[in-house]
Picture 1 (spheres, rainbow over the protein chains, first blue to last red):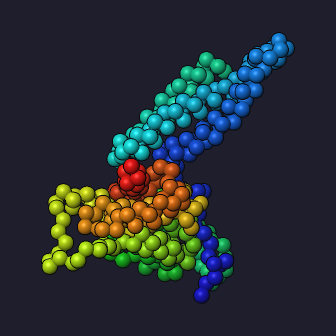
Picture 2 (cartoon, rainbow over the protein chains, first blue to last red; picture 1 turned 180 degrees about the vertical axis):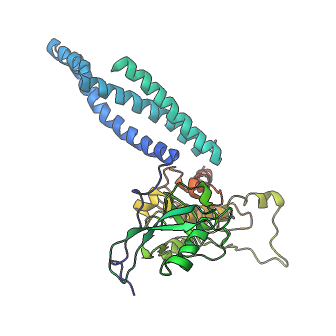
Picture 3 (cartoon, rainbow over the protein chains, first blue to last red; picture 1 turned 30 degrees about the vertical axis):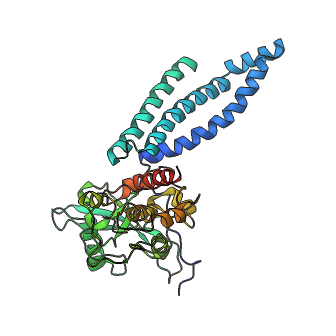
Length: 126
Length: 236
């Protein structure tokens, strides 16, 4: 008999092709995770903006720095994506758009709209 | 037709004790509409007889030759060479214990299939003749019963890669749904009870690799969603 130690696991994530629907699912979880982190940053920002004048100035300089703008842009893109794909997932849960074609199309649409809006936001912010 | 087909094939020999590696092969085009299985057969019969893989019917019915082909799972016997980018990377089904070359251990996969009790369960007395089914009830099985258990979907699922010990995977869940929607089956409640579990059913995150991989164009993701909805309906 061959022991388990000798039997290697066949390659999985490293070789599997990234289908658009897989990207859509992963991006949903990644954007959700990022939004949680972003919330913390957002509340710190809010408390700075409503604090003493020096704190307000600090918040301004934070938001005008490159890091601040990139963070805001990421937050926006994550929010748009998570919102749109969340609706897509809810519709799928409810039984709409369950054909193979519709599943692919809706993933493509959600990703395309997010890219468009993120590009627009990048022009405005960065 | 003297153009050569370039392949890169996953090799593993348990007796040699070496690590798995990719081996390059060149195979001539032997016939129009040549399939990937034809190329593998050519290697085995004319170049290297030690190449090991499963095959049987050769026409997409038995489900023996599920492989990872250029990064996507599919059946070698119905995958046309013409549509594949070369060199064609041929690997065993992902996230499985490799026995030798392209042959993987399917025991766990079939055990998960067994767990959903893939047979008709009834409690009412057996009628004099067969259990009848209305045509519209029979139609509900379309898109569910065609599964050939090749394992292409289950081994394409990242949720199953990480939690395959507890998550049943798309193939078993598609089959579970096949019995849930069957009007003659009388154990629907028990089937729901078995599936009502954070891991067994609810690890599905709608990645839909299963749908993309299925060589029979079925949709396990939709079947899983149908199970979830049916459970909600039962509770309300």
